Image: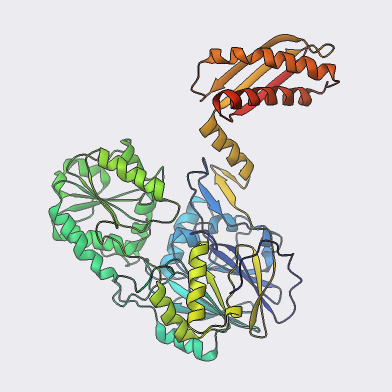
Length: 561
């Protein structure tokens, strides 16, 4: 197993007949999944998703893959192949199509419907190619064969990409649920047929690789939800991913069985479930679905709210309910069900929502106390089964944090894949498949691209650091007018602070220090405005640190008389 390396050189030019794989997201994180395959001068993109921000990324709406690697080669991109319709696999498609709108987008019917609904908001009309399991499409030098896989969303696909260098099998997100709600299981017979021809590189889902055993079947969740609905005294609020069609179906069925009406809350939930219903992926029992405006006229014991916000997203419906600023007011006797997994990194946000709802008097049910959710990703036992079935020549674990990738790599070696044929890499690492061997040959720049309101890529890590300082340490400004001939202060210093939790008068103690420091600086020959501002910044900074053990943002303004 090759360790992840950060000191890799720029990759060499791609030799003829070699297939290159460059992950631009999804390795080292849960989200932002994107991989680029290159062969004979053409590029194939597999998935193009987003990552949602954490608490230490204030003001950020979304995080995109870094398109810099392909930005000057967009004409070489033959297609974007999407494995399924979750945001972490399709959410960045509009931002890539902004760079070249006519890139063909390839995926299953439901996946493309979700993408199309998103693209309407961006006023983009792409060329779409609908595929389904069993089909093979020739996209430039890439022969793409699509395989059915079970996941937490209908119509998910794996894709086997064959080039002159061999076959790369990308599983997408999958699990081996033998009793899925839509009866569409992961097609292991198709996997076996591809394996008979030879799989040179297996790019395989790692998200649940550190969980032993097998995934709980989806069908076992329905009876648990039904029991919760039967016991609930007043309203039931169920929070889930906005694209989890199977979970919404179970909520609709349980509501119908207990005489309750269901209202969808959250723009993405309303949009996605409307698409799923129109295409026949969601079966809505007659008379069960109502508009959120009608809920106020119904008895509490007859209401179910199907909401977004299961990951504690600040602006999602459930978070706003927990804060008391949503039209749905949660109170004593209400039951809230978090029917989703806890994505790593979201723990604090989710528990903050749980505590807020509990404080309002609601009974909160989550995966930790009841079987209200099952994962959508293959666990260790399922991964081992796939390795033994496929017998790949090389393995690249994808989709997961470092611990998930490492756990998946260990399973691969247990199954008999030679350790030197298991490549554990990071975003931006370049892997070449040549003569049946996958090797790391270099790395390309691959950072986070932040979406902040209408701006894309303009916010930097330095900006986020400033925002964190403002949020945690406060802000201090200082205005002073200096006679540049003798350094004496003509006006000021006027010091003001925000978010400092101290009286403004405390800064009277530091003004003599500022005046003295400026005189000394000018006497020493400092006349440049920037130099004098730095003198003020350092003087205030040392004083604040000595007295209050704080490091606020300090903005000095020095003018000359």
